[in-house]
Structure formats: C-alpha cells, structure tokens
Amino acid sequence: MDRLRQRADFLAVASGARANTAGFVLQGRRRDDDGPVRIGFTVTKKNGTATERNRIRRRLRELVKRVDPVSMRPQHDYVLVGRRDALTRDFATMLDDLRSALRRLDRPAPNKSRA
Image (cartoon, rainbow, N blue to C red; front, top):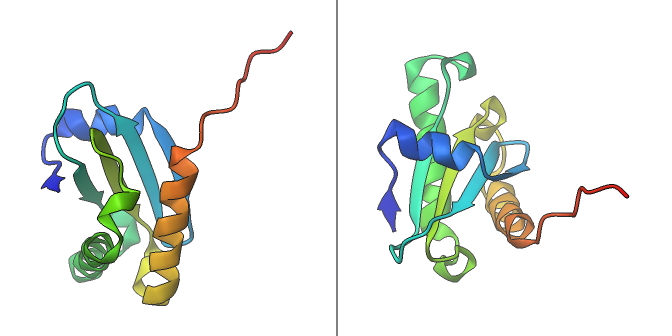
C-alpha cells in the first residue's frame, strides 16, 4: 500500500464514493492505472489541537494496518477523514466500522435516473 501525498489526489478521491461512520469518513475512487492501493489520511483543525489531531491520525493509520488487505481493492485510492469521535471510540469498534465502510464502498451505486 502506498500513501497519498498530493493535494490533487485527495481532491480526486473526494469526488468519489463515501461512507460515513462515527469516527471517520471513508472516501474511495477507482483509478485508471494498474498501481497498488493508495491511502491518505486527513484530520481538520476543527477536531482539536495538534496533539489530538495527530492521535486521531495515528489511530487511523493503525486501523488500515490491521484491516485485511484483501478488503481493499487494487487500483483504488482511499482517504480516511478523521472525526473527533475517533479519539474516544473503542478501537475494535472502529476496526469493524472500517470493514463495514469498505464493503459499502464496493456496492454498486444506485441508479438515480427518474422516468
């Protein structure tokens, strides 16, 4: 797994599918190349002081390390946007939330056309 570091990559993923949980928002998007899974992390200033934001980011990185690599699709980019609840939420619950969010992103998008 590689890390997302360029702002343009984060913006591209933001336009893709998203799954909300109490501790984070998972955004995902398919790429047009044959590269590995890439993951980015972001925590905004409204989530607390720098120490708290770094703690949230560390918890999110650990979640990704512990989730099954098979559940993340190759040729996809993912961004985890941390929320304040990630500081106090049980880690095992957050791990289940991430697995569930990955499954929700894999579902096909509902057809929004109206006849």
